[in-house]
Image (cartoon, rainbow, N blue to C red; front, top):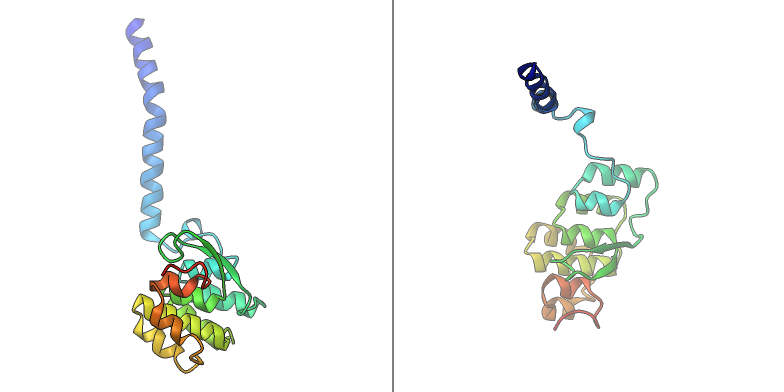
Length: 167
């Protein structure tokens, strides 16, 4: 009787672990066979800032097609790029800072560039060493930010307002 009770208790304790292991194996097999399945897709992108963070040019294009303003400022923060400060930037500038080359192209093709934004994005592209994006942006830049590019303290010097930029 005691042996039977011990076996039942062992089965009751082991059953959830065995079921969890079987479920995990099934799920991971499914993921390996069909990684694009809806169950494994990231949540949909709801803003240009998210599209840039994910380096998702298709999502950025879709948002712009649905009426997102490519010149509307987005609020962003990054420990490395902004020194942890929250700043308002045009999406083109943030795409250049995040080195989202294809998103930069999408922003340009949807009119997401102004002379000031192009100058700031060019400053950022040069600061992060992204020559391809810098070359793409150079025709749009007016040179108004040349002094900032020459004296800026890395990416933060390009992204932060003059008063907040580290010297």
